[in-house]
Image (tube, rainbow, N blue to C red; front, side, top):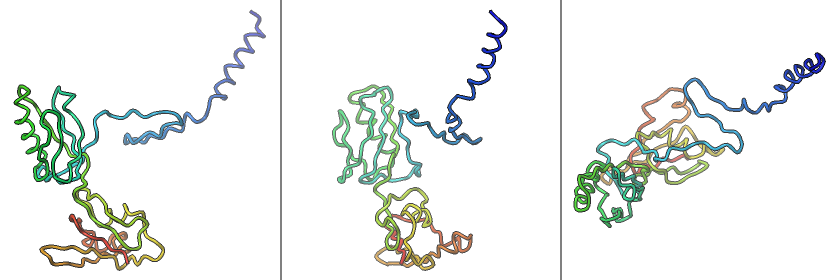
Length: 216
């Protein structure tokens, strides 16, 4: 093999890396383990188990909530089900089971007791996948007025952020929350301009089911 041929090979070795596609650096990942932006055509592995919503242990299940019911080592009984308007869920072997009005732990115990007719020592867990029974409403000069699922500890500012922003006519200093308790309606002021500047933080209250945020 001639020395000239070896020099040509060495030159190619230096050139080829320059031809590699630069988009391999398009993945963005920070030191906190944040999400990686996939390349075009690349899929991201998803966990097989659905994410649950963090709820208080005493959270009461309501109609239209979505539940994940896991029965250990019984894949055919494990499933995600919506709570029907009548407050019940439909499960294999058990048919209709009352869910509304119970906590996830109480429902798991009820299902476990009922399954003892068919299984030895069934282990059941219930998690809330979606909270749809509790809603708040945003109306007025926002991009997407309407009902919103009430997330745990949801504040006025979070509700407004979920409504797509304000229209050009919004009076952001005069926003208020209408809250009805025991038949009595209360008007709670919210000055958006002040709150986002760190002032009047007490106005950024936690919302309750049925609250109406009004943007005049």
